[in-house]
Image (cartoon, rainbow, N blue to C red; front, top):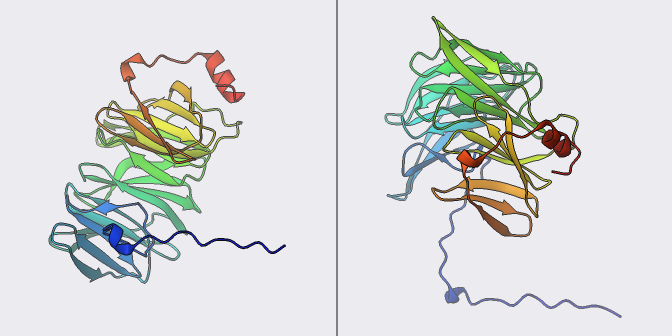
Amino acid sequence: PIETRMAPPRKDPNASKVDLHVTYVPMSAPVNFVDHRTICYTAANSVHFWDLEKNSTSSFPTPTYAITKMCSNDEKGLIAFCEGGAHPQVYVFSVNPYKLLFTLSDLAELELAGMAFSSCGSRLYALSRATSKKLTVFSMKTGQLLPGCEIQLPLRFDKVCVYPGHKDHLAVVRSSTVRIISISKSFETYISKLQPSSIPGDIDLAVSAYSWTPAGHFLVATRQGMLCTLDGATGALLYICQAEQPITSITLTPDYLITSHIGNTLNFWELQPQALAKVTAEDVASFAAGMA
């Protein structure tokens, strides 16, 4: 017998009103804000701005033939983007007025994995993964590398995530692990420390989402449904809980931690940092065995 499938029911276009905003360009972050109402994105070798309040757009050419990575800071109105090709350079522009501030070199031989500004806009963090594996930190006052802030990494990491509450604490993330980096000021230099990994490296782990909390803890979610809380200063594993379904993203509100899950499910968590207890060696062993 020949099976026939019924077409899905069609809805009258006049039955509802939808405003659809779409951008068909690759973006290094879901949304890049350069101020409280303006979104920045790239297309080919140009930078585009969309003022949401005025519903107007503008674009500016760049000295590159292609843009591979971009980040922005809405506090000082800064954007930084990386060009394609070998030995890529990073260009830092101010938005108002649109002006080139710095050109940063010697960041990577082949590929820059990611970039991020500190929330105050005084630093730019650049993560290299080919061929060298390192994190470099630049001052946005001088455009120079901060002394002591070229950190060699043991693995190739994909993302750098800076704690919004303090620019001296950040995390580097790859698909299977997370490491915390702390920076402290010393006499005429900085001391950068890659904190030990508190998540065992011999387990089958797939990082699916991550976020800083206002209290300075770093949350890591996995495809296995685990939600891990790390100390944002030392990287120590503080707490582990198990969700019923794999976690795909994390967001924070003033009252709750919200996780989205496979199966179109949202979970609301009450976050109480003062109640976090240090895990024991038995807890870590249980976690490594996949029973946590």
